[in-house]
Length: 293
Image 1 (cartoon, rainbow, N blue to C red):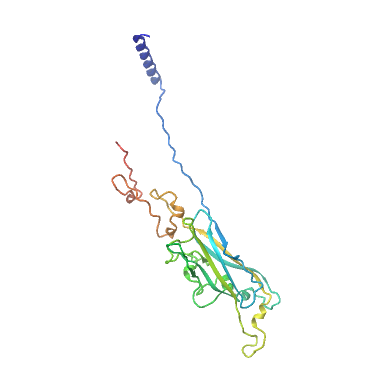
Image 2: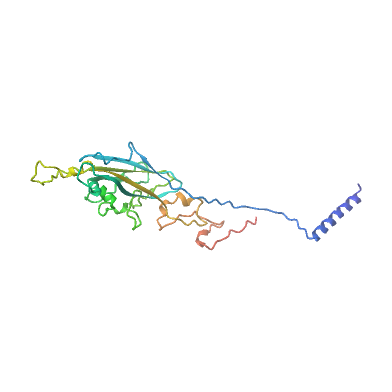
């Protein structure tokens, strides 16, 4: 093909292109982008584990002077940090037996809780000494637990934060335990609870001090029995506001101590190329200029 013919075809092609454009058909480059956002609800899962022996105990076959010691653990098996583990106690299934007592509360009042403690926290995480929930010299009984009679018997720091809630908090927010508050997922933490319950050994006789050989007052409880329950509820941390300068994922388990309504997560330092901190503009966003190089 001659050079003249080649040029002629080139011109024809160009003319055809102009004709198509003039006819209203546009051709353009195209590009698309997608921002992938994932929303999923976390899980709260409190596991009560045993230490050596089961946390269950039998109130149906004890005698005055007997003591029962139990230790159980509180483990976070979910994906969300636990803020509080709230305890309330209930009793049911009272049976009179051979004794004359017909009142379950009176029977439960015979059982004193001499030790009631939970793990404290420390910054090193090597050893967590237990701290007592008990306050004052007045004894705490199983009847007190069932009837929420905690005044002067349970330290206020170990009560639910909500003033309308009468439960005991086994994972409290208290001033000297800032290392790990609540039960986080990361770092892994397991808190243990220990209690010692004693059947009172009351030597009082029905006839009083003058009756040296009479029947003991506690005889009326012979054969009494009851079912006693520790009911636990794990609660989530307060809802947090995650703005554009907060790191992805920090809202779940990185800021347990900030969910007390007083402070919020510390956002990462977001700066432009001139070193200006973008956070100081708050909601007035500063757009980083495009790179002109």
